[in-house]
Length: 125
Image (spheres, rainbow, N blue to C red):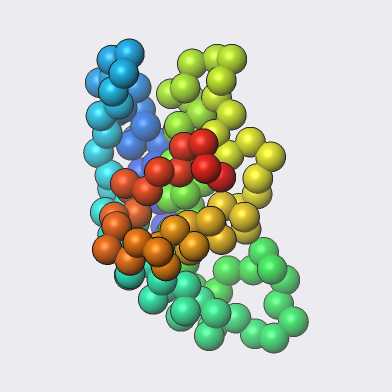
């Protein structure tokens, strides 16, 4: 259940926005990791790197905290695609979780005070 909570939070985030949006604006509420700063996320990334063993699969996740951010990011993109009316709904199309998390790390290094849920992921990953 713990692993699904961030995904559900990301979907709720966009579901709320879908009902509240007009043609030009989208309103949403962040839950879980989406409320945290980029600085905190970068600390969790460092802890994740320390916790991983050598020769571990690049898809391995060692800490629950990093797993929560990964789940939030996947839920956010899923929800963004659901909310974006067809034929668009291509947020993150052609990217995978590793690339998406690398993009978020790069963004956060440049903007350590930014809030994760306010990062301009749409059209960027």
